[in-house]
Image 1 (cartoon, protein in one colour):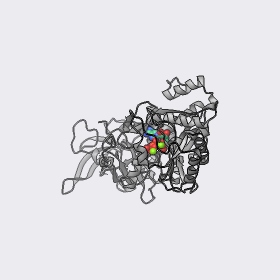
Image 2 (tube, helix red, strand yellow):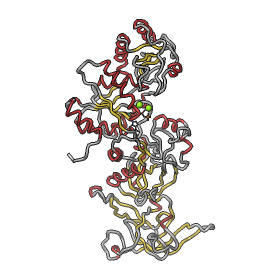
Image 3 (cartoon, protein in one colour):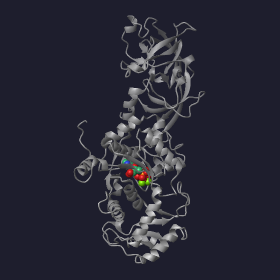
Image 4 (cartoon, protein in one colour):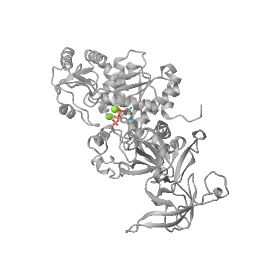
Length: 554
Ligand code: ATP
Ligand code: MG
Ligand code: MG
């Protein structure tokens, strides 16, 4: 094992292993609410929990925290499972908080019998008005001292849907003067006459997060329950509830908190991401501009790049914002190793090689990946007319321009050395054609003296008559500011980058005809691209994952 210093979460576990826990006790869980698609922030939590599972050889459950039927759907359950698997993790058990509804209900009845819970018939506004402030105690509800019999009867009516939705709530009877506001008789159940995606109409009451979460951990024998920092004040309540249902000596799960990870130039909140989808700012949850795991996948990110990113930022105790450039860095790192090199021209200008025989064509050998010897070679067709990038030519240029100019030589990748001779222009003065001559003895890899001649600059190109036309989707940051949701008063959608998607036609080497959805390539000198699921044989579609270099760093 490498001597990496332990992060604070691992230190907590190591400490517990020295005092209270055995290795066999260790068990973790990842607990998403199926109310949207997972995003890059969730990837941190997934890598943390499943990473601990790998490190300690301990089981990790996938637990759906499905206690709010209004927002939750099977579609989200399916998407979450797909994303976790795609990242390369395997859960021990697939669990649902909704599977514990009966157990939770039975425990609530116990709490009522023992004087630890009561039915409150006030409105939520009245309850809120009695909460007090952090420095002033709250006021007891007038229903706080209902008899256990009355409470049981009312609670059963709630359960059966016999009371209106806002008629009653069940509250824990703790302490309306607690310095921790969360402990001031928190609500455990509310009446909701809504159908649930798994339990249908079995339940007309639904437990709140605090009541469901720790108990679910307890039921599953989770040893360490890691959540984000906003739950720190909930820890006391978590422990209070678990203590009420556990027997002396039984292992109680431990809640510990870590900092939420935010990514720059985007939002990581399912609620906000849902708005982007519903208001049509993006096309879907898996739109390649979305910071969702499914969006990143479609964009061309690899599971490895996301895991490396999550590991590199690690876990922390303070919330911070990670520049999206870090994520892009990891995409480049990984794609550089695995993506075959190909040539594609995105902004073409035609080059005619005047001394190349008309009608002739030949196949040239090209290396697939200099980073991977096993990747082999392929053939690329060459002919008299080729496309190069418009920006790779200037009629005249200074010494630092190592591309094509008139009177100077440049190498065509995998092909010949050419020299600029002349240009044709339209009425507005735009270049329509560049005329060049080539050196027939300079073919790459031929070993001739001419082929070894040093010329500054190598250009990518595509033979005009062989070119595969494709739709190229160029993505940019979805938001034009670093922290679009920093100002809570402001609508974050006003910061949407209007140029986050640009559609162009690209001219690609014909080998790409055989590419399948999700196949990834480096378009040499441009960036990394992958085949989109919208791709058809008639109209191939490529997404730009990232450019070759970080254009934002300049
Ligand atoms: P959202 O606001 O996006 O819905 P959430 O915390 O409500 O986030 P859950 O589905 O409850 O979403 O999250 C599952 C797990 O992922 C929780 O343990 C949560 O703390 C963690 N998590 C969510 N967002 C982040 C984030 N940005 N960084 C790290 N962990 C996160
Ligand atoms: Mg949550
Ligand atoms: Mg949420």
